Length: 168
Image (cartoon, rainbow, N blue to C red):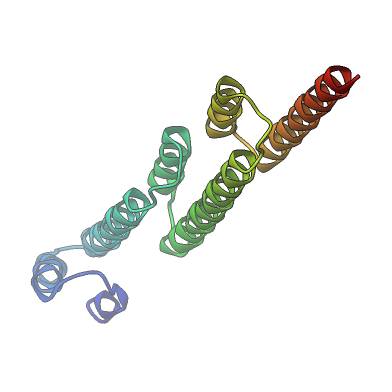
């Protein structure tokens, strides 16, 4: 069992020394196994702690997603199960970061386009920009941008109609 301690990669030299001493001082095979199992559990807990630290670095996860990750990690009974959990949440964090960037880029481009619409009234312009900033999806932003273009075209048509009536 002392040789097996070397396979527990997260144990420090001091930890290995301590568990080696416990195993050597054990009077029965059951106590040897108990000491070794304690080392395995200690190693697992260190892995869980490191995984929780990694999860805390994922800034794009919601509070409930972080809580789910924590619960999954803490419920894990085997070292090999921890890394796949961390990787799954890392991927989710990256996907959410990419979606957030895409949303921000769409928002910025839409505002620039709306601000180019010269036939919108100032309050209409402000309203469309406010709606774009509040939008939660790229599709919603595109819809608002289309609404703004439509309103701009309506306003232009009204101006042209007024000019035509003045000329007559």
